[in-house]
Length: 150
Image (cartoon, rainbow, N blue to C red; front, side):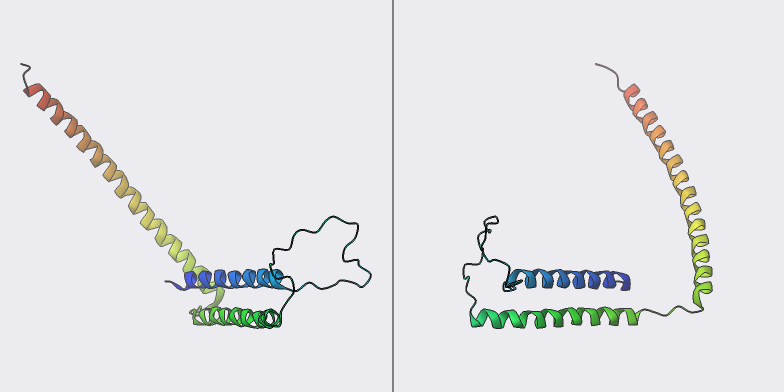
């Protein structure tokens, strides 16, 4: 796999870890009272049913929730370090921006030359295909003319 594909894959991994981390923290975070003046149950709309079958947190669930951010952040940091290592492994450009622009112009000229050669070969192949079709048609006509109806 080339370096750019590896970098793209690592960026996708980092994004996945970040979204998973945020989603998990959002899902598993214990409820926190916003303000002592804010009523818990009032005249507002009825709250949605709690999907959590165990509404009272236990010491184990609190401990697990406390560990999750550390584990997930460690995984995110590890992926970021791997990305940094991939970036550091990229070859350095020589000669600066001017040399790069010159090299790009050179490669574009080569690309144009190869493109023109391919166009010529394609045109020659299309002419040859047309000739083969005509010869095949003539051969088919001759075969049909040689057979005598019974």
